[in-house]
Length: 621
Image (cartoon, rainbow, N blue to C red; front, top):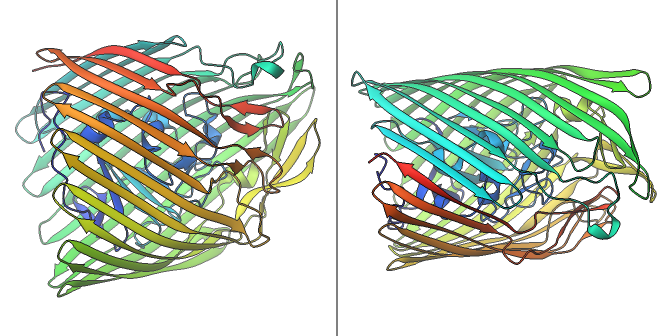
């Protein structure tokens, strides 16, 4: 699809319902689940600096804590869907052009790597209703795809705002020799940040938390006939202030990846990637009055990951099959320089390998699905992951149901790395076993040219949940350890509605997720209710969108001692063409400056205040 010269394209008519998630290039895995798609026009209409803030409009999408990636420690940026929660490590697989984005050592996601303006679409699969994806996809998958490169484009944008925000972004694409294209982007951001401790308890050691980062990407594409090949390299360099005088962390990361796909009736896909990363963190002990702190240890975590995948797809009308194999090798070591003396070292190597197959067959208005994966998760564990489902289309109504079994292996971070947040210590556990999930889902979709409604009921039972178990809790210090806790059950209902009317689009979504341990305590970091609503107006070179996000109360910990009250925030964004190829930009988040609690350490932490940015964007006509 060609990229419009105008950066403010009119929102298109509602596209056909998505019945498959794209694995890589043109290879798709048909699934009986509900798949949401956010295209470039929709992403442009949602306020938020990074992609995680924009994705919060999807019901059930959340990070480990309520904090934005603008100031959140990277180790808390794991993705959760449908109330499964996370421990920093994602229970959701995130792919960028088919390449895993989840951190190789810890499973979280560096959202600063991903420029929302360079994403053509995001496909969201909730649940493990396909067996194509393995580890990290226990709760679903997010598939991100870069803008196409079949025509020349050049853009430059700058935004500035309160809290000393400064954002610079540029990108280009140059096709040449009819079958080649080179493209790239550069995105840099800096802010003085904001205080994450309420003013009433703030001490002399408290400083503003913020981030400075730069993220360049370079990509070479070859495309001719039915064959496509790309080679891509992306780098991330970021430095973060964590909210006190002595606590900081920094990350330097680089990934190279290549992907080939070819064929018409028979399609073949070959993928490889290599990631090298260094993570550095300083931890401190803070006195009760928050006027004094001292370094407790400094941590260095070098890690690397190598992965590859082979996929083959073939159609035998009325049957489609997709099968393949994948592998990954992750190596990392956490070295803690203790203060005043001493050293603590933990780490290792984790091999994972899997073979899988997925098939679907058309039987009149019905479609049957079946999948199976056999996976070696490391540490001597093997897992069989089946999936199956049925869809039935009757005019504008589509019924669907599915059942599946999935898993998540503990990351090296959970096995070997100890960390500290404020005066909360979380210990590693080298004896962790993989989590397992058994899920069922049923839903109905009502489809129309200008309106759409989807309703889903789900039930997910999780065994051996990996969570942070509280060992002791005092006003001065909390000690937790990662453990396979009691089993848990998450069940609920999800509603997603959209209505087009002339130049307006109204969208609303709601998620009810009752997520509990079998001992009846609520799973931490999961609200029972959450929802969002947005109204978008677009005409010619004008775009305006305003929306509301609401989250009910949730608990910080496994014992349900620390309650995080519910809250709602209002945000808006606007773009206006002011000359040929030039547009003005405006973005406002948490417009009413609502104060909300994001966690306890055991001191309460608070989320982002009102943030606004204004800027200009130029696109070469």
